[in-house]
Image (cartoon, rainbow, N blue to C red; front, side, top):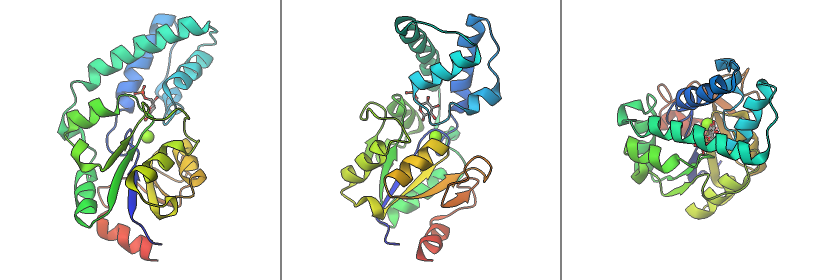
Length: 218
Ligand code: BG6
Ligand code: MG
């Protein structure tokens, strides 16, 4: 496989923001009078903000008009942004920073491919924005994963053919999006959650750029 571009999802791949999303969604659910569990929160991974709200309301068996939903999504986001504004570089997941740095040193082009509209705040707080040659986030695309738009836009911005890109993803919808873009996809997680990943790693802690090159050589 000829690989020139590496595209990284953000939430769950480079940083664990799911815990902050959970706290903010849970507070919203508490206010609406129902319990939103961590297990329910699993269903929100990789899913857009509005779709996440729909899933949450489904759990609470609540139906609301669009206007009210918009208001609730904004309320949750305010809460979430307050939390991520306090993040620091030590929250980068183990091994991710050195993987990114060594990928760049080896000459790979790197892109971010995230559904989040808050990606820039997080990248700046983690001080890693400069490690990406292109940043495609929720403010730049309109079709949510599993639509391949975010990854195709990443490949285009890197000026690399889609088939020469590899995606790193922690969500099933993201893996489907990568496959829809005709990209090889390395899943961060386990077989149970990500049965369709082309290769699985638990994280970057024990997966170096050397391991990556061995993998794509074979
Ligand atoms: C994804 C997360 O990266 O971004 C989802 O995995 C989240 O849980 C989505 O809903 C949208 O994020 P934001 O920051 O735009 O609300
Ligand atoms: Mg993710």
